Image: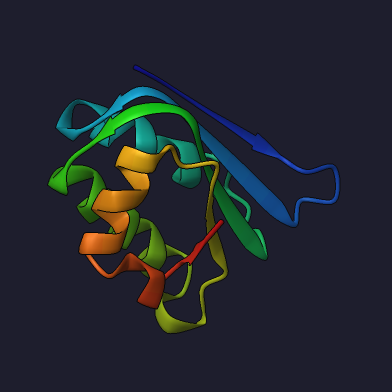
Length: 101
């Protein structure tokens, strides 16, 4: 499991890449990825291209990111989900809270 965060050149978009399992073991690393920048980007992108597993604690982490980013006004995109990850997000009705692409 590895989590990488990168800020766009204009500091408007923070992209967080999750590799491997996205579960409770990722909690501290995921939280640090969006808190350590010290900046408040306009948009967050969670790239799950290399994520092969997601569980309920990861769903909770995504909700914490949403709260951190402004709740209902947050602009968060979850991108590049494999079919299994997308199914978990769909069953949890996360398309109501996030833009899933």
